[in-house]
Image (cartoon, helix red, strand yellow):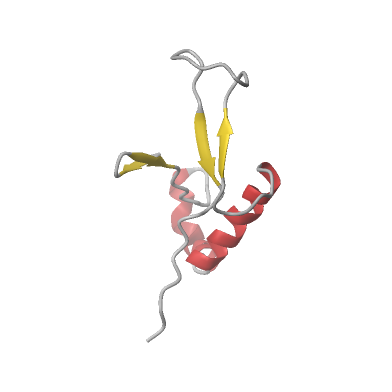
Length: 94
């Protein structure tokens, strides 16, 4: 989680796990091939697919309230607001 302007954002940092750790040196070619194509648009497409599966499909800029018991509030009953809009940025081509 990362806090920006008083709001919390989940940050996804995908990685490929190779164990034991010293074997990463032997897998440099594999890692370059596997991680070299991870661009913003592909990550957004994957994240958007998960969002569409997990949240009701009522639009991308809609807030969804998640709470343990509907209609009840209090310090011991947290309420989480999730928005289906991702932070994907489309860089303008010059």
